[in-house]
Image (cartoon, rainbow, N blue to C red; front, side, top):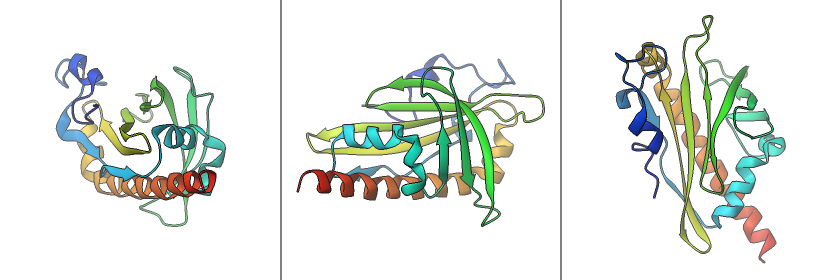
Length: 179
């Protein structure tokens, strides 16, 4: 089982003092609630990788485009939780795919926006027709604590909203396909 607080990438991640650009500190990380979904992991995976239809169910990331292959950009439109009614463009890059259990992308450090991060979306099978979903965001580098303080609460809320919406979408689609 994958634990969002103890992912394999964390074992080899450098600390902030070793790498001020993209070092990792568990204190600068948010994790959504773990949601149990009454649908197979393959159904949830299909929804997460069907970026074209994010607007049909995802309250936070309403648009996304990507080839979903390693290092491919994921171009998103995010609902602003700090400025309701506004959309924010965001580009991150695919950094890990383990079908149907892990889909990860992250923001890279760039001088004009020095706030790298890594998002892991974890699907775990708990039965033939049930799974769990949890999402995490690690705010990396020496500015990660700024992001945690100013954005941590609304990112957590956005991820929880997304997890609950994913549950509804997966259970609805699975029930419709299986009478």
